[in-house]
Image (tube, rainbow, N blue to C red; front, side, top):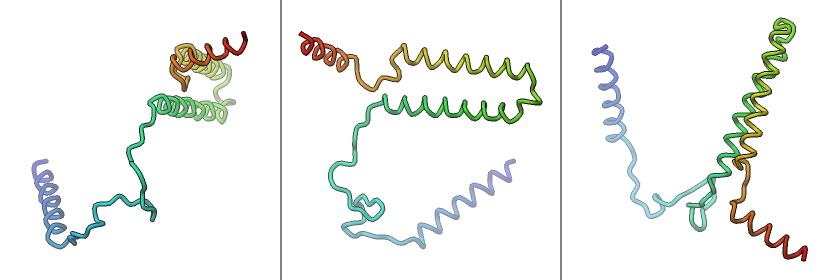
Length: 128
């Protein structure tokens, strides 16, 4: 193991050293500017995106992955029989329970409680 670690360390050191010696060096004015797919960026590249959108994306990935498990069950449904059917019903029940929990907690909402309160106030004023 020590010989392998020494070999890896020597290889990494050699690769970094050779790239430092043979690599190109640019000191032009435009070298440090951001560049994306041939488009020169205008304005700030630091855009603040609310965490709730990431949460919805994560929930989507989780529930989408569960669909893969259900598809695998559907492929093998004849071999699994009634035991497999009961297990997939239990699995779907847990998924629905998790979705209801996320909905009740408000994890799927894209607006804050303050924004919802303002909408309710505006709706109440319009109704008067």
